[in-house]
Image 1: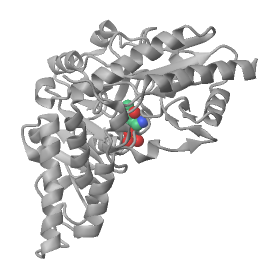
Image 2: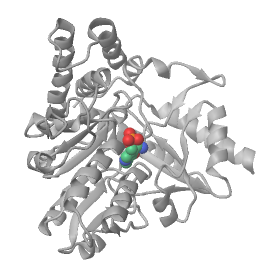
Image 3: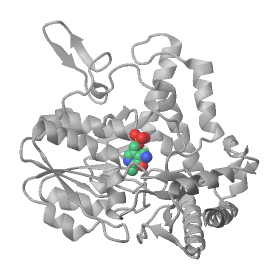
Length: 407
Ligand code: PMP
C-alpha cells in the first residue's frame, strides 16, 4: 500500500484544470462518468494518428496492428476480471447493451411462460426495462428484492422469492444511486442453489472494488468502460463459455458469420458471434490503457483514498441541519446521495453549478428506488481518485449557500 500523491494525479487529468463560472471546477459527478487521464486520451490519438484500420480480415500492416491491439485489450480485460477464457470477453457498447444482449439472446431462447426473473429495487433502469420487455414477449414474471431503510438488499426476502420457477437473477453489484456494495457472492450462490442463471451489473463496481468472475462464479458480468477512466460507447459482457456457446447471436451482419448463403448462414465462434459490424476499435484499444492507469495507482490505494473522502464527506454533510443522506449501507463506495428539507434537488444542483461544483440531481435512472424512499430524487456527489478533502469543503460551503439562498 502507498499513499497516493493526489496533486500529481490531478495533472494526469487536464479537464480538471479549468474554471466554471469563475470558480475552480469541482467534479463530483464521477458515478455518471469519470474523467480520462492523458494516457487514455493519448491511446485514442495514437490509434487514429498511427494505425487506424478495420480489423480481423485485413492482411496489410495497419490492419494487423489494429487487430493485435484490439485483441490485446480483450486479453487485458480477461485478466482484469480473472476470466478463465479470452473468448468469454464480448465487446459491447456499454452496460445497457450487455444486459439487452443477454435478455434478447439467452432470455428469448431459454426463458418461457411462467419462468421467474428476479431483480432488485435498487436496479438502474437498464437492468429493469430489458427484463420487462422480455417478460412481455415471453410471459415471464418479474420479482423484485426489497431494500431496507439503510439501502441494503433484504436477503431474507430474496430467499423467499427463490423457487424452482426462478430461472434468472439480475442484480447490481454497486448501486449508482446509493453507493451500496451488494453481497453478490451470496446472491449468486443462493440463485445457483435453485438452478438459476445470474447476471451482475458491474457498471459502478469496476473502478472501486476488485472483481473476480471465477471466484464469484457469476454466469454473466457487464460493465461500461467510461466508468473506469476509459472512453464512452464501449463496454464488456463477460459470460461463461458454455452459456455463450449455447446462446443464439444478437445482431446479424459482418464478422459474426462463418458462411453466408441465401439458403443458410452459419455463425462464427464466440466472441465474434456477438460482435457484428465494425466495433469501436479505438475505444476498445484505449480501455487497456485505462486498466493500466488504474493498476499503476493500485486499485487498493484508489479505494483507500476514496474511502477517506467518503468518511470525511459523510461526517461533514451529516452536520448540516435539514440534510438527510439516502443510503447508509455498511459497505459503500464513494457516493453520497442526499435530500434537503424544503429544497428541491434541482435548485441545489443549479446553485452548486454556479459555484463550479458538478453534481448530479434527479432520480439517477432508478425511479423505483426513489419511490421506495418516497422522494422524487436526490443530489448526488460521487468521488474519484483525483478528488480531495478541499473539494468536499467547497461542497459543504456550497450547500450552506444553497440553504441561505433558498430560505
Ligand atoms: N447500471 C448502473 C448501476 C449504472 O450506474 C449505469 C450508468 N449510470 C448503467 C447501468 C448504464 O450504463 P451505460 O449507460 O454505460 O450503458
